[in-house]
Every structure is written in C-alpha cells, then in structure tokens.
Length: 303
Image (cartoon, rainbow, N blue to C red; front, side, top):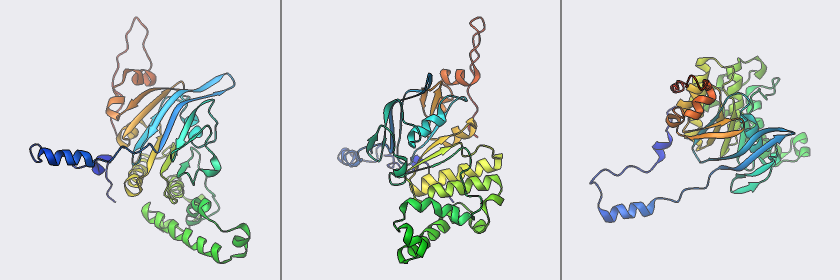
C-alpha cells in the first residue's frame, strides 16, 4: 500500500512565471484558513507529591501530522500521554480536544471525542481471537442495551455484524486477515502489537496516541509497524502522537519531534532541526566538565 506524506496533500506549488498576478491573488484567497489543532496542550504541569513530572508544557498536533515526543527515561513522556487521555489530572493547564477545553479529559468520552490510544504493555484479551479483539474497539459506538445484547435482539445483532465487518476491513488494512480466528495469546509479540493498533484504529479516531508501540520489536517488525503508522495517517487522515525510544526510527517517521527533559519541553521542530539542537544532544549524550567542553555530534540519522 502506498502512502503519502503531509507534503503530498498540500496545495500544488506555483511554478515561476506560470501564473499571472490576478490568478495568483485568486489562488491566495482560495487557500483555506489553518484548521484548529486536533490536540492542544497549554501550560501542562503535573506533580506527584514533591515530584514535578511535567512543567508548563505547551504542545499542539494537527490533522494528518505525526508528532513524536522523545526524551531520556523519566523525562515525563508517559505522564504527558496519560494527561492527554485523562488518566491523570494536571496540576495546572488545559487540554483541548475536538474544539473543547478540559482541565481533565473525561476518559469515558475519549472515543466520542475521537481519541484512541495504545499502551506500553499490551492490553489485549489473550483468550479471544484477533477479529473479536479488534471489534472491541467499537464498543463505545454501540447503542444496544445490555439486555438487547444478552438476548441477541435485532439492534444488538446488527451492531455485532457491523463491528465484525469493520474489524475485517481493519485486518485487511493491517495484513492480519490470515490470523483472524487465531487466539491472540498464541501470536508472536509483533503481531499482537499490530492487533492492538488495529483495535485503536477500527473506530477511525481523529487522534491516535501511541505509547511505545515498537518497544520489544525486532528491526523487521519495527519497519512494518512504521509502515502501518504512515498508512493510517494517509488512509484516514489521523493525527498521530508517538512516544518512542528508537531515535533513528522516530526521525524517519515523524513530521515533527518534541523533546522533554525533566518534565520540560526543550525542543519542538522538524526532525532535521531537532537532531542538531545542542540542548537535545546534551540531554541524550550528557555535558562534559567545563575543563573539557562537549563534542556535540548530531543524533543518529533516520532509520
């Protein structure tokens, strides 16, 4: 499956001398206003007792953008994702989703706000097959009552058929169809991570939060997962926020990279800019003593 970068969906470039002034003015007027961010964090701080996990973090993410949040261990990356998904209430600051601002994101309404996430540790039902695990990603969209589902009444049966059909489409998209009836607990780890991605995508979220989706994978599995993440952005227009430790992979996959250190954002920009940033290099490689100034080498190239 071919994918398109964010540049592929931009307005076509105007060739030099190929358009007159009136037409150029009309083209300029036709450019749509910049859409509001899918996600916006403003002044997010978070503390646990005397420990400051996050310090005044501002961050935004737009439609069809892949944003990676990186940083050394303990930088606050997972805490930030937990604030975005409502698991933590920030000490200060607000989170805006779907045009609505929250002091704490309501976890029970995440799906209706167009948000889905995966976790560092697999959160699958190991005794269910692949199709049923994926279909569970549509539970919040179902309207049949508990009694209707137990009795197998009309609306419940219809929703179950629709959920299975959508799960089948997602299996085709992520190349999982041959594993549809296999119990998830018997799959290789890389495939289990792909099932979790399928379950998050099946409801077609506007915002997808991926917390270390490639942790523990082989190089081949990481490459496959990176392909599917790009494909999800291209196919569904999903805005994707990614937490990942593989720096080379991050720089090759992301449109933008934000860097946390000790709970503060120290950089935010295009991958090529961030990997040359002195503060980022210091955060990952450390700073030499004053008697021996640091030799700052760029971080690894994109994988």
